[in-house]
Structure formats: structure tokens, C-alpha cells
Length: 286
Image (cartoon, rainbow, N blue to C red; front, side, top):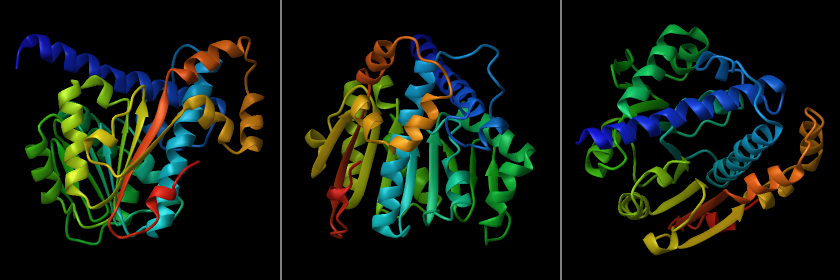
């Protein structure tokens, strides 16, 4: 790979830190509860703008609603694959809520995975929940991967689908199990050809599946998904439980509502489904 593409990849890895610091700040102000974020990322030195915090709130709650709807439809008899997972804490939060799927997989650049593994190994509040759900012998762990009974994290490049699929299969990914794939601000950093290949791979590999994508664009139907929908984040924000929205809107004064609306209009959540088991996945919405 050229040094130019290495630099580009480095910039993409940097977005992981930006997002994590923003989420950590929003959590510290009280937008949503996440007791695990503090173990992955330090508190931001400067305040984040209220519209940024509300944007992250809408993103986290929106993706979470679709994820929970999928878990409900499948009665947790499913697997979740988080693509470009970064320092995401969903596994730990689902465990706390007793909503773990059969297995939770995360994939990201090896450099990010090794950082995440360092935090997991050195912080008992992160490692204990993994051990509590593990029923095998010792955990399989090396510099760029961890595999336990219910949680697996892999260093892989989403542009190299053959390598990623092999690694996932090695840690127990089952294509026949209903599968939720989640990507947040991931596809937009790949070339259109590579991201289309990823969507098509997911559509071809899992007969019963849902793909949830948070970013600025969507092309699920052209890559083999049976049904798809997309909502811009203003629509998502206004569909969230309004008593909770009222609560978070009291946390900080928002001077310019237009700024928030501009930000929310810039992003959308799209989702596509394939449903060979007729679980009613196409009915999932906000």
C-alpha cells in the first residue's frame, strides 16, 4: 500500500478518537448512560457544543432502537457484527440489560483493536463481563484479536472481504443465524466500489439479516437487500421518546436551533433487511 493510502487510513482511525471523545463528553453531561465509556477514553478538555451533543444523542438512541427491535424480533437468537466498531461499548451495555445475542463480533483496523484490547485487559470492569459470559477454557487473545464465548473482536480491513470473512468464521460466525450488521460513519470512508462490495457481501452471506448504517448516504437496494428504508436524523430525533428528548433538552441551552437542524439533516440512518426465516424484519422501524 502506498504511503498516501496509509495517511488516509490514519485519518480514518483518527475519527474513532473524535467520536469517542464526543460521546464521552455527552455521557458526562447526562445525555444517556454509559458507565463503560470512561474506561476507553479520557474526558474532553473543552466543552462540546450543545448541538454536537444532541446529534450524538440522536445517533446513539436511533441506532440503539433499531438494534433492540432486531433483538426482539429474533428473541436474541442472533448474532451482531459491528463493522468499524472503534471504542464502542454496546456489548457491555447489552449484557447489563440481559439482551446479549448468541455472539457479538467487532471488526476494526488492527491498530484500533490493539488499543481496545489493552483497555479491556487492564480494566476489570471491561474484562470481567467478558469472563462472566465465557464458558470455555482460557480466552483466545493475541495482539489483534480476542475470542470468547459471547464476544469477539478482530483486527481486519473491511476492504479485504476474504480475509475478514475467514477471521469471522474462525471465531464462530454462523451465516445461517439471523445477523445484524451495524456500520456508523464507516462506509463513507471507503471507495464507492469497496463499500458496495461490503454491502453485497453481507447481503449474499446472510439469508436472514439487517444492515443498519448511520451516515450521509444509502445504497442498500442496489446491492442485494430485499427491503430498505432511510430516515434523516431530524425525523429520527422527533420520533425518539419525547419525555427523554425533553429531559436532554434541559441539560444545555441551545442558542441556535437552526445549527442543530442543519447537523441532523446532514446525516441519516438507513437500514436494509433480508428475511428468509420470515421473522418480520421488514416491519422494523422507529
